[in-house]
Image (cartoon, rainbow, N blue to C red; front, side):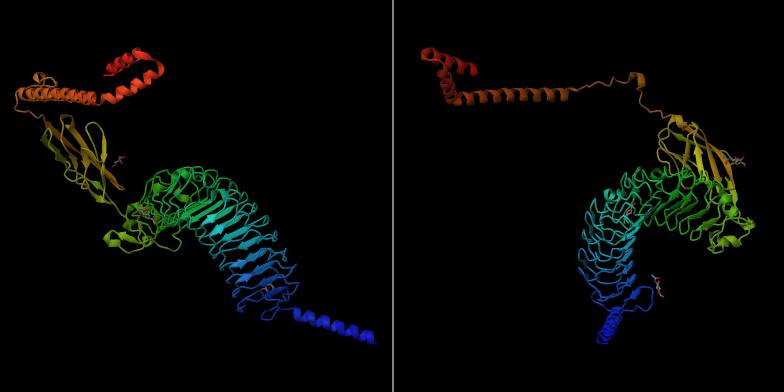
Amino acid sequence: MEASKAVHVLILLVCLCGCVQACPSFCDCSAGNGTVLCCGKELTAVPQGVPLEARALDLSRNLITSIRLGELGSLPELEELDLSDNLVSNIEPGAFDGIRGLRTLRLRNNRLKTIWPGVLGATANLTVLDLRDNPLVILLDGAFPELAGLRQLELGEGLLYVASGALVGLGRLQRLALGKANSSTLPTTALAHLRGLTSLRLGPLNALALQDNSFQGLRALRDLVMEGWPRLAALAPDSLYGLNLTSLAITRCNLTAVPDRPLRHLVYLRSLDLSHNPIAVIRGGMLGQLVRLGELRLAGGRLATIEPSAFRGLGLLRALDVSGNRLETLEESAFQSPGSLASLRLDGNPLACDCRLRWLSGRRAGPSFEGRQPACASPESARGEALGDLGPGRLACRGARIPGKGARQTAAVTEGETARLRCAAEGDPAPAVQWSTPGRRVLRGGDGGRLRVWPDGSLEVRYAQAQDAGTYRCTARNAAGNDTATAVLWVRVFQPTATLGPATRPPPALILDQVTLSVVLTMGTVCFVGVVVCCFSMLLFWSKVKGPIKRTSEVDNTVHSSGMTAQSEAVKYSTKML
Ligand SMILES: *[C@@H]1O[C@H](CO)[C@@H](O)[C@H](O)[C@H]1NC(C)=O
Ligand SMILES: *[C@@H]1O[C@H](CO)[C@@H](O)[C@H](O)[C@H]1NC(C)=O
Ligand SMILES: *[C@@H]1O[C@H](CO)[C@@H](O)[C@H](O)[C@H]1NC(C)=O
């Protein structure tokens, strides 16, 4: 009887102990599925007594400053540990050794400055490690030893230095996000170890240019994002060499031109985002190699021109976003197959609503504006109106015309003078004027040199020469038509009054007049006399000091010979020297 009572008490005790151990104070274990919730309880350390069977432990939003060795004890079932939003600045190596089954470790928004080698030693099953929003400045070799299962890694802000072997254990990593880094170079060697990486997101880096072979070894990479590099102005031609991307975003950087050369080999690229870069122009055919491109974004830039046939070769382009730029128009001829364009963002541009945009109105199956109707900035009569509300009839142009071209223009100047030929063209949109010379050279506005086309269309011929004479042709052209006018330039040959013809011109030899000749001769004599006097005085000076010199040579010589002959030889020797 006594014994059975004792057994009962024992069972009761064990039960009680179990019940007490079931949940640490301040925590909530009521979910019943192994989840222990201790979030937002102002805890300053890891609570004791977490049940052995816990599978998820949420310690987020507390005031924990460090994770000490042994504090977490042994939690063989734990798969998920959330320590986000604490003040953790120190994790002792071995602190996670008791939870070998850990799959997800969240350390977002803490105070970690580095991950000491050995801290993550025992967490070989980790698949998600979130280190975002930590002031991580340095990653040392061996920071992630053998995390062979890690698929996703988010690294914090402010990284200054990534050791070349810091990422060595992460061979299966698929997604990596590097936050804002203070360094100005990409950790190319460290990244090269990530052979399984498919997605790479690089936060702001202080680099001016992306060097050649920046992503060597990342053969599996498909998705690359470089966002917010404020000084990045250029990509070296082979900077993306070795990559085979399907999606690339280089946004909020300082690129002033489409990096067509570095992109050329990315023939599997489906999506390209160059938004928020000060790019001003998309030139004809510059993206022509990207034959599979379906989506192109260049929003919020400084695009003023999309040249005709800009998207030549891009037969699969479905979505284009050029909103928030400085575009006046977007012509249908820019597209390889306008019919396949399903989505077009053109809002936020100072559009001139004329016949060039007619292709976007009145077609039932035209591209969708994604609910953002572009508005007209001109002409005056349509300002502020939505492009879609204007019928094709109001999207009108006036073909280029050169009034008064019937009366043929002539100008006559003398050689060396400046001539100006007028070409005042009208039309809507304002026509572009070009000139062709009698020698069929074509001149456009902005061309420099002796012959120059002014913004008003006129042609200036400076320092006219005989061969400039002839018939010039001015062509004005806009979307609705073209017009041509001709002008004739006469150049009178300059007849100087002097009687010397080219044949009697003196030969280009050096001829000195009498005065110069006498000056030269006098100077030469003076120089010669000076040099002679100088030489003589130097000889005199030397002969005064030659005594000691003679003596030393005498001594040198007497070492080898003897007697009077030696002395007379010495005298001869010094005489020779003189
Ligand atoms: C456990 O249950 C809670 C609430 O019932 C749920 O939020 C949590 O995701 C569950 N955890 C697991 C590991 O199933
Ligand atoms: C961006 O480039 C322009 C010149 O193209 C330069 O003047 C400017 O300072 C650059 N911006 C930054 C943040 O470096
Ligand atoms: C100029 O316009 C005419 C029709 O008026 C057209 O046939 C011709 O091809 C145009 N030329 C150019 C260079 O645009």
